[in-house]
Image (cartoon, rainbow, N blue to C red; front, side):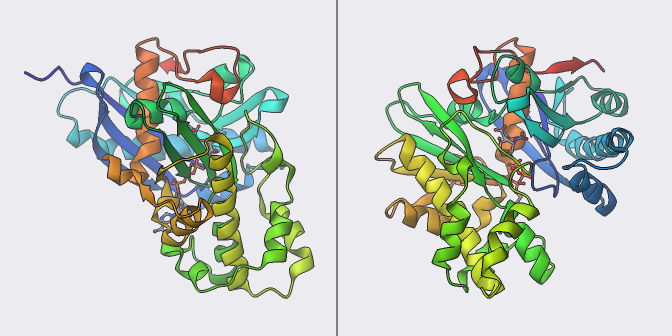
Length: 365
Ligand SMILES: Nc1ncnc2c1ncn2[C@@H]1O[C@H](COP(=O)(O)OP(=O)(O)OP(=O)(O)O)[C@@H](O)[C@H]1O
Ligand SMILES: CC(=O)N[C@H]1[C@@H]2OC[C@@H](O2)[C@@H](O)[C@@H]1O[C@H](C)C(=O)O
């Protein structure tokens, strides 16, 4: 007889600001099983307000509170879509919130959210605020997915790398001997999305097709790589606080004559080489690299990461049984489960925290 289900819903809205990814998962008996997934796009107005809140602006306290209420409605809608797949009561909804400021060096990170409203709207326990305890313990508060990557994808005696390519990229190196290292590599899709939006009015470069038809401009690539963050040792994490449109504009200032499609090819290469160099720096002979996050659907990008690693084939996490667009939400469902078990969620070797900590705060139904 199978164990009684232990159902959690994970909700993630990341730096791409495209919407909410939700996953219903069952962790019965210590297993990890994703049952159903849903995606709720942000209404255009909420998306642009969340984008505006990424930087200092007028009356932002009130605007943040209102955006948090709007977010809670999107989260509730995503939960509503997942509920029919549950069958039995869901133990808790684990919700990341929307990062609008990430400044671990100043001792804070801010994921705007209204978990009380979400508990009210869903009638389910809500677990939120997963990052601040790690920062309180001296850590970066990010990335948090490496512990989950090890639990879900780790294989004894074999070295595997999981690379999450969302707005920002992050790697988890599962060394195969229980050790896990990882950090944010820098831009994932954020600069590419910005550029194709500006030039073709599209949200992203589907399959990397536009970049594939362009040529990498080496001097521009060199200028883009001239960024202290790439040389900084781990632990490290980043976000739109650093990699924003002014960052890109400043880099492009000397390269006004480069064709937009060639800029796209160069930005794709930038993401690929910063990920590949980060992997190389952590582990010499990596053979198995698995990509997740929306960037895993960018064939050009995966090909370029593989090339930059000297011909390694980069597969998506689909090969390990989890669709790439489900991994992050599943990770937060799992972090919610860990919270309920009073088990730590962070890895001090990754975030730099003084020790393992239970992450999250409960808003009862
Ligand atoms: N078919 C596709 N082809 C190319 N790129 C894609 C495709 N589908 C999604 N993407 C990219 O993936 C992004 C969304 O990825 P994801 O949902 O993993 O990001 P996120 O969770 O918001 O970010 P983060 O992990 O930084 O928090 C899109 O903005 C787009 O750039
Ligand atoms: C502060 C913040 O929201 N960071 C995100 C972001 O998106 C990717 C990368 O930057 C990672 O550090 C993190 O998300 C994943 C889910 C994490 O915590 O592992």
